[in-house]
Image (cartoon, rainbow, N blue to C red):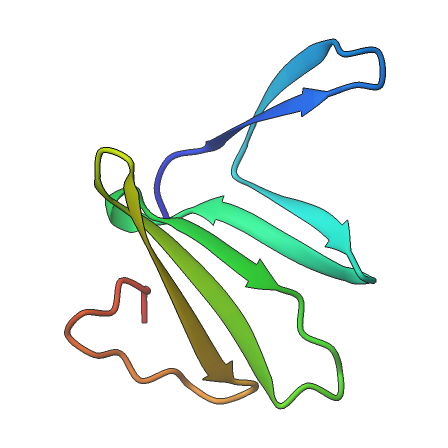
Length: 92
């Protein structure tokens, strides 16, 4: 992983607070949605897996050019080792 993520939180009164963190989670539909910086300018988004889930999903957001991004959805088998291909940016 690389740099920290800067988060801007807007309070109910409209005031904003900026925080720096390694990663952050949003509780959504009873699950944790984790966001963290990845390698090569990527933003990695992953959903907490549950005990009955057979897979977990990761979203990779990559900048392409000004005003363009690439969004890739990866499904990984839960509890198994990931196979790393030549274009995989994950650490083995």
